[in-house]
Image 1 (cartoon, helix red, strand yellow):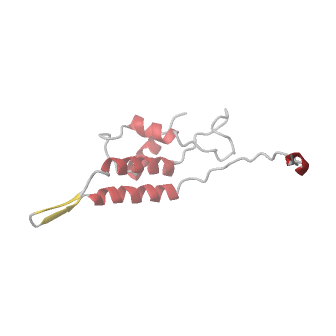
Image 2: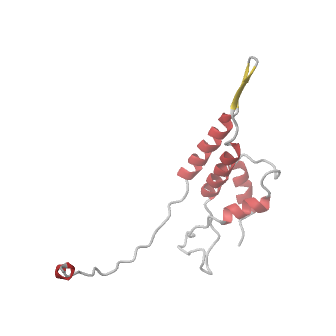
Image 3: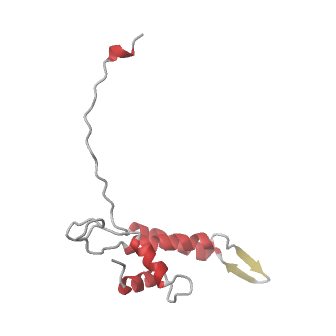
Amino acid sequence: MAATELEVSRLRRMVAEPTATTYSDVSLREYIERFSLMDSDGNDPTEINWTPTYDLNAAAAEIWQEKAGLLAANYDVTVDTSTFNRSQAHDNAQKMARYYAARRSMGMIELQAEPHVATDPLDDEV
Protein backbone atom coordinates (compact mmCIF):
# COMPACT_ATOMS: atom_id res chain seq x y z
CA MET A 1 0.00 0.00 0.00
CA ALA A 2 1.06 3.52 -0.66
CA ALA A 3 1.45 6.42 1.72
CA THR A 4 -1.79 8.30 2.29
CA GLU A 5 -2.68 11.82 1.21
CA LEU A 6 -2.64 12.80 4.89
CA GLU A 7 0.96 11.58 5.25
CA VAL A 8 1.99 13.40 2.08
CA SER A 9 0.33 16.57 3.32
CA ARG A 10 2.02 16.28 6.70
CA LEU A 11 5.44 15.70 5.14
CA ARG A 12 4.88 18.70 2.87
CA ARG A 13 4.37 20.87 5.98
CA MET A 14 7.39 19.31 7.74
CA VAL A 15 9.69 20.26 4.86
CA ALA A 16 8.16 23.71 4.25
CA GLU A 17 7.01 22.91 0.71
CA PRO A 18 3.41 24.23 0.56
CA THR A 19 3.12 23.69 -3.20
CA ALA A 20 4.06 20.89 -5.57
CA THR A 21 6.46 23.13 -7.48
CA THR A 22 9.63 21.47 -6.13
CA TYR A 23 8.31 18.19 -4.74
CA SER A 24 5.26 16.60 -6.33
CA ASP A 25 2.92 14.44 -4.28
CA VAL A 26 4.30 11.43 -6.13
CA SER A 27 7.90 12.26 -5.19
CA LEU A 28 6.95 12.91 -1.54
CA ARG A 29 5.12 9.58 -1.49
CA GLU A 30 8.31 7.90 -2.75
CA TYR A 31 10.35 9.52 0.05
CA ILE A 32 7.81 8.35 2.62
CA GLU A 33 7.71 4.78 1.32
CA ARG A 34 11.49 4.47 1.58
CA PHE A 35 11.13 4.59 5.35
CA SER A 36 8.65 1.85 6.16
CA LEU A 37 8.45 0.60 9.73
CA MET A 38 7.22 -2.44 11.58
CA ASP A 39 3.54 -1.85 12.34
CA SER A 40 1.94 -1.74 15.81
CA ASP A 41 1.16 -5.48 15.62
CA GLY A 42 4.83 -6.31 15.05
CA ASN A 43 4.44 -7.10 11.35
CA ASP A 44 7.42 -6.38 9.16
CA PRO A 45 6.80 -4.43 5.90
CA THR A 46 7.53 -7.63 3.95
CA GLU A 47 4.68 -9.49 5.64
CA ILE A 48 1.20 -9.82 4.13
CA ASN A 49 -0.60 -8.58 7.27
CA TRP A 50 1.54 -5.42 7.52
CA THR A 51 -0.39 -2.21 8.07
CA PRO A 52 1.43 0.59 6.20
CA THR A 53 3.48 2.48 8.76
CA TYR A 54 6.15 5.02 7.82
CA ASP A 55 8.78 7.17 9.52
CA LEU A 56 7.90 10.69 8.37
CA ASN A 57 10.74 12.17 10.44
CA ALA A 58 13.30 10.13 8.50
CA ALA A 59 11.74 11.21 5.20
CA ALA A 60 11.77 14.86 6.31
CA ALA A 61 15.42 14.59 7.39
CA GLU A 62 16.40 13.24 3.98
CA ILE A 63 14.57 16.02 2.14
CA TRP A 64 16.07 18.73 4.36
CA GLN A 65 19.53 17.23 3.75
CA GLU A 66 18.86 17.37 0.01
CA LYS A 67 17.73 20.98 0.32
CA ALA A 68 20.91 21.82 2.26
CA GLY A 69 22.98 20.33 -0.55
CA LEU A 70 21.25 22.54 -3.08
CA LEU A 71 21.89 25.61 -0.93
CA ALA A 72 25.56 24.81 -0.19
CA ALA A 73 26.86 27.09 -2.94
CA ASN A 74 25.10 30.14 -1.52
CA TYR A 75 27.46 32.72 -0.08
CA ASP A 76 27.25 35.93 1.91
CA VAL A 77 27.76 39.15 0.00
CA THR A 78 27.91 42.85 0.81
CA VAL A 79 26.86 45.33 -1.85
CA ASP A 80 27.26 49.00 -1.02
CA THR A 81 25.78 49.18 2.48
CA SER A 82 23.60 46.06 2.23
CA THR A 83 24.67 42.64 3.43
CA PHE A 84 22.96 39.49 2.21
CA ASN A 85 23.57 36.42 4.37
CA ARG A 86 22.62 33.75 1.87
CA SER A 87 24.45 31.07 3.83
CA GLN A 88 21.74 31.27 6.48
CA ALA A 89 19.40 29.26 4.25
CA HIS A 90 21.96 26.44 4.06
CA ASP A 91 22.55 26.54 7.81
CA ASN A 92 18.81 26.45 8.47
CA ALA A 93 18.31 23.45 6.14
CA GLN A 94 21.07 21.58 7.98
CA LYS A 95 19.49 22.39 11.35
CA MET A 96 16.15 21.11 10.15
CA ALA A 97 17.79 17.92 8.81
CA ARG A 98 19.39 17.33 12.23
CA TYR A 99 16.10 18.13 13.99
CA TYR A 100 14.14 15.50 12.06
CA ALA A 101 17.00 12.97 12.05
CA ALA A 102 17.04 13.13 15.85
CA ARG A 103 13.33 12.27 15.88
CA ARG A 104 13.38 9.35 13.48
CA SER A 105 12.37 5.91 14.70
CA MET A 106 15.00 3.75 16.24
CA GLY A 107 16.20 0.91 14.08
CA MET A 108 16.66 -2.63 15.16
CA ILE A 109 19.46 -5.04 14.37
CA GLU A 110 19.03 -8.75 14.87
CA LEU A 111 22.20 -10.46 16.04
CA GLN A 112 22.90 -14.12 15.42
CA ALA A 113 25.15 -15.87 17.94
CA GLU A 114 27.79 -18.06 16.38
CA PRO A 115 29.78 -20.66 18.30
CA HIS A 116 33.26 -19.69 19.31
CA VAL A 117 35.90 -21.87 17.69
CA ALA A 118 38.91 -22.28 19.94
CA THR A 119 42.26 -22.32 18.21
CA ASP A 120 45.11 -24.46 19.40
CA PRO A 121 48.06 -22.17 20.25
CA LEU A 122 50.43 -24.96 19.19
CA ASP A 123 49.15 -24.67 15.58
CA ASP A 124 50.85 -21.27 15.28
CA GLU A 125 54.32 -22.57 16.12
CA VAL A 126 56.68 -23.52 13.36
